Length: 323
Image (tube, rainbow, N blue to C red; front, side, top):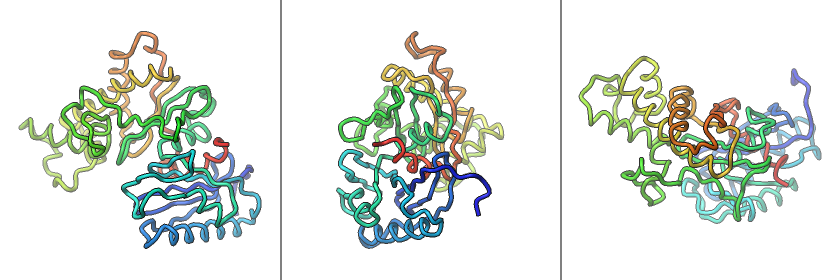
């Protein structure tokens, strides 16, 4: 029995990851009625779709909401919001394109919409999070990859195929000597993703002989979280790694601001949990780099979505905002 009042309409949020697929039944203010997960790495995409549809049906039946679910939203890598297909997603076990919208609608008879992970995060932040009531903002997702979602005049900037806002693959001079997984040199992804922070850590440690907690961490076990923890314990090299990363993000944000004139820029994802370690140097670098039109006019804020459920909530918000 839910201990709080529920607010229809209800939606299903699905976060399609490379290892697991999480799903949840959500009301219009972001209350999660029930959630679960299934393995993504099945023998075929049809087997995965059958399993997901069965589990979604079970939670709808359990909550006695048959016929009351407005839609299913799926956040997925390389999702084309226009065609309803996943295109060339290298971290999924099935060949692309995957006609995901058709597969789910044919199984459940419920309107389904898809979007890439970062766009889902932006819409989720606008619907349930810190961006509620803000008409112009940017979400930068920092995790395994770097993504972006841009909202202008209250509408998500989607583009021809739903791929607008690939901010992680904008190139900058500060990353010119780093090769990205996309094949290009200098992408923001090579600095601000988890792998980017690991590479910065490797470089900073090799270029200095100063003592650091980080030297005791085996190479294969280095994570942004461990660098963050070392920085919060006063480790100078760890602090410099986050200052460098934040400064790069601030310089990048100065260029992004010129595209959409945002009121706020939100950081979302695991790497963003470093909070002021990133935000403080980011604000500083933005002020130094931004065109005078944007100085002192952009707020830099962390996401307010619950870390464990943020991706699901972002996906659940899609049917409410994508018509």
